[in-house]
Image 1 (cartoon, helix red, strand yellow):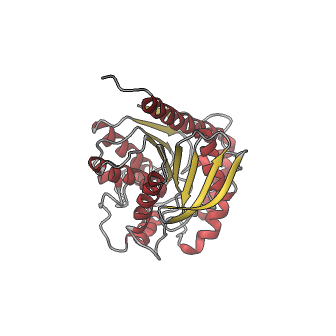
Image 2 (cartoon, rainbow, N blue to C red):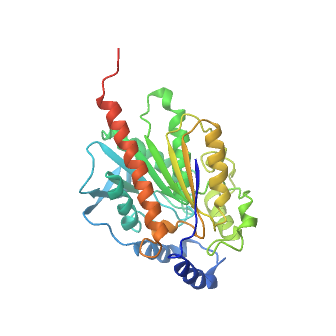
Image 3 (spheres, helix red, strand yellow):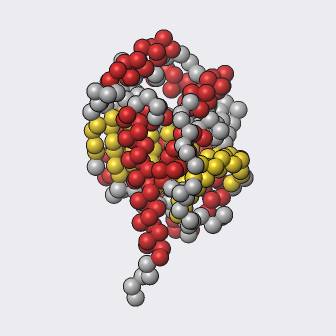
Length: 316
């Protein structure tokens, strides 16, 4: 299912203001020196009420636990942050991930996966796998996975890795939601041309810089780096939210088309006028609130459905 959300009249002035503010910096290369700026940007997301924040380690990966007051017993959410595999941290996305955690109703772990260029591919995906397996080892009964941007790419790559291990008895996630996922580090999507002017933040050059720092000469088509090239069978239900005005639009559309053809239950929501990971601007865009609410509803229902299937005895 694909849904198109028109730009609302309420959001139009805020979008125009955002574009004007971002225009002076569009296309600027971003490396490790941008980490403080990037973290401060995400830290500006309003904090959710009644979410306890704790440092923790899961599967040997340090990070942050977010524990909302309405958490369902046995339910867990794994949140993988974005930042082009070079920027971002668990602490920086505490408010944003907490907003999603409280809507989902699940204790949530945000790992500090290793960043490039200090730790190139496959360090990030290896840490994501370790954190997921750590949640399973700690007794999580039902797990959903969420990621934004590069974290969305990690989420989708993780789903395929776990599905390949299904025959080994590895517990599978019951659902996943990704925002503006980066699914193709080879940067072959046509939206690098069709949305080059519309995207207020990114250019192909900026993303190529991130990819080079992360891959350091390794194959961009490796499915653990670019889930667009992964085997997309036996995956759980997935929701993708993406802005129509971003160069990574085709990464979402192409992935959704391939996953749907492989039999995956997938929902693609395209938000007109919206930039990359607009959901973090909950205090700026009405569309951000609508998208985050929809993501919360989707994942909460996956957890409820899984709980019912566990508690309902199978017919003999």
